[in-house]
Length: 195
Image 1 (cartoon, helix red, strand yellow):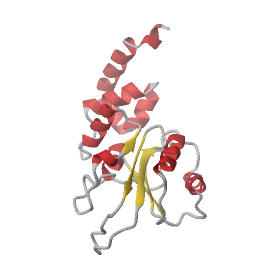
Image 2: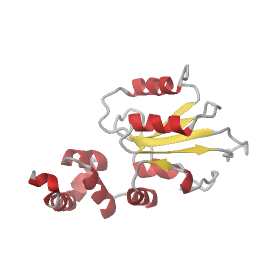
Image 3: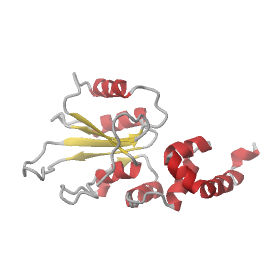
Image 4: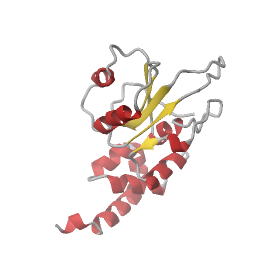
């Protein structure tokens, strides 16, 4: 099961589920993701069966992405989402916030929810590199922090504050020496340092 945080946290990973019972072009979903997330992934779910009732759900969409650094209040973001898709209200939109991007990403295929209808990994649309996708999708979300994840956080950050935001202050404190070793090695070999 994925770990979720309450909606009070403004800098968690988010999974948006749109259940408006209308077909939305995937290009429109992608446009929303590009406009709102630094990294994102989404999938269209067709034919999901509710485990509790056995009913077939209508077509719906799962979008996950990072909301780091956003200064826009959560309620405003929800209203902006409704406006973007031309919805008159927020009915049919469900927001789950995950502690990790890994948890939200893995939920797109129901990887850790065997009671739910499975979906193919190839159906996921993302802006992650193939290597990053593999690291996040295959991560054990029970013990998320690995060297590979520390490395990806350092590679994708322009400063150490971004690394801390990505990993969380608790994980940063535990892994501080390893993070700084990776950071310094990357930055010493980086061309922008020489400029």
